[in-house]
Length: 443
Image 1 (cartoon, rainbow, N blue to C red):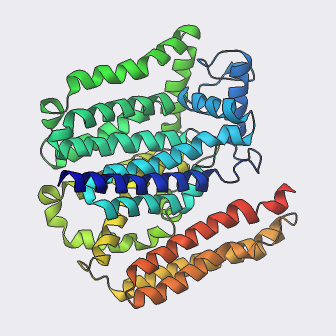
Image 2: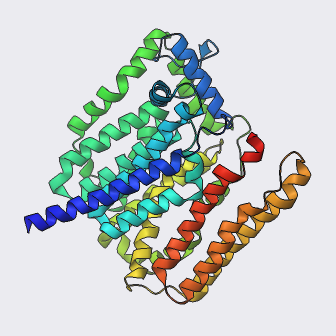
Image 3: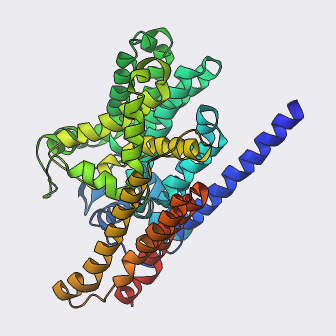
């Protein structure tokens, strides 16, 4: 028995590692072929360049002035890439690509015990092939690190809650991950994960878990040992000017008032989440319908589902209340939704659930219309508004073809083949965005 389990563990580990390597290749391929184009990338790149020139990786600066936008962890990640590949697009972005692949690997490994091998692997693949993954893990910004550390913190806490035999280890990982998240983006790294955990425990009427079994007595010191030294160092070196500007302007200021024109309606994040999770988000209505039918069981018999829903709802809800709105702010809500989608796909594949055909037709019809809209927008509207840009009608073809083929497969209940088709459509769209469409703009 022991040998069979060990062999199964090794085989699963090999599959997870293979997906990790493919994800590294997928996220990093061609990242040096374009210059730093996002408004934030050149700023962070120049800031790192200033810090290297000053031989000071403690105090973030930009053109010799304090830059209190973000803490130091992402600069250290970019610095590592620059040391390996040079001060260029490759060096600045490679860290984000590796972090994205590490997120996929962590999801696969952490979800195996929670949901089984199939759901774990599907969750990783859904995350890798989503539209927004193409953007977020190919840019020199702090967001990938926050996504990874928040996901580790929350899933580790859930594993600690459900599995007492690994509680000490998982709680240690959760507190350390929140500390690194705080080093990457500030208070949001522990405040929102903490809010989600408290909300979940309140809904379960087990808030006492925090102090009874939550290991706060050594969890808080671990958090402080990791996160506090840099904040103290930058505070002392700048006479606390950096800390004050970071807390009051970049955190409280961004929440209470829109900055740099980044504002939007209250439905902003509902729309951006749907678009960012394409092509998989078209099935979210089926997920919510399925959960609504079994809603009476959430509080007591489905703690995993309740935790994931609290995670996604609290993260999206918090930033919906914020005055400053950017699509990247709610990427941390994608992992729980991808996990719910993966669990639903596996349930359907195993024959434990039969989705309504009209719902599938409607979902794939939406994806088809999105592909059509992309082709019309990139093929006719964009060239008329900006004549220097080429006709990019082909941008919508991956979704158009994937929707049509997957529709035929789902109608015949060929579930696995349909999911593979949609994933291939996502990869094809990424290939167009990365390799084909930017080429006329580069050369």
